[in-house]
Image (tube, rainbow, N blue to C red; front, side, top):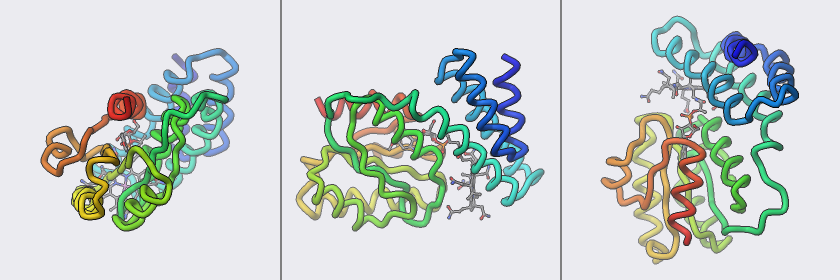
Length: 210
Ligand code: B1M
């Protein structure tokens, strides 16, 4: 669809206002929010990732693209988050220590809120201690961790170890996600689940909290 291609193209250019306006136009044209997200915003960001990997663009361009992504997400958020749904339980969410990538984590938060979960978002660069403390203080059912760097994946294991040491291992479930993470890795570090995207995170967390 032409407008979704335009969103992806403008996102690659880091055109924040254009992405917001085009996303709004797509919403007004009754295009499914999921389609706008997957084909427009995430589609554009995937290309940015490839260009960055191949050294065809550099950090400043990626930062601008990330800002444009957030501008588009802000428009989609009200459509993806449901109102007045009875709470399905509390989820502590964060990107692990050393890692500043938060777009995917934010998206997962939006999808979880949309499904009726109460999300306590700790932000990015979250230490294992803060994850466990927040779970304790809020009597949370689940800790959700995001990592986008291979170097920060081991922090996920530290959170699980600390949770077990705090005696919460059997009460608080853990789920991990992010581009370098996999189901095998989840198993290896003793996480209860792995999700590949926001919708899948909702499914997995529903299964963990029945
Ligand atoms: Co960075 N970066 N980055 N970056 N960046 C990657 C991750 C990289 C793969 C790029 C590349 O080389 N191709 C690479 C990592 C390589 C590696 O570790 N193997 C990389 C690098 C190297 C770096 C720096 C080290 C660069 C440098 O400084 N030299 C640096 C690290 C800074 C730090 O964190 N300490 C860095 C910085 C940045 C920016 C700040 C410029 C910016 C982030 C801005 C922000 O987030 N606010 C950025 C960006 C934007 C990217 C790419 C291009 C895009 C990430 C993104 O937002 N994708 C990324 C390339 C890529 O991933 N293809 C890259 C869109 C988002 C919707 O997808 O985050 O995967 P994603 O989330 C998905 C799923 O993974 C899943 O659901 C989401 C929705 O579908 N998911 C979960 C995520 N978390 C989940 C949690 C769950 C469940 C599912 O449960 C709890």
